[in-house]
Length: 79
Ligand SMILES: [Zn+2]
Image (cartoon, rainbow, N blue to C red; front, side, top):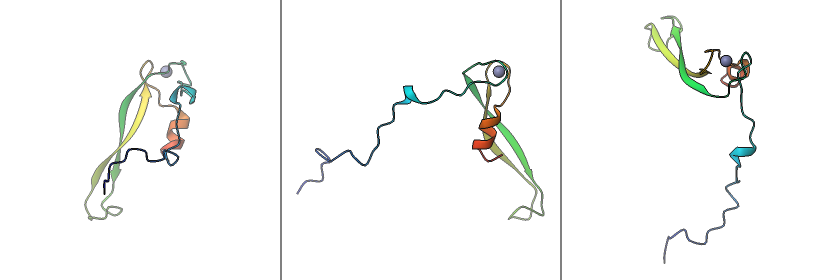
């Protein structure tokens, strides 16, 4: 009676080859490295579930070279 996971089939976990995935590049300058940034969304007291004004951070990535946030990134994050 062992719960050791040795020999468990690995079919449930699809292998992802990250090197074959598309690299997102900056629309403006073609740079492919990004830095973490945040939009700060201001929730009005009327919209807020707490009834108080709130600031909610929304994580995005901006180009490490020119600072632009790629449009497709905005679409992916639902913005
Ligand atoms: Zn750029």
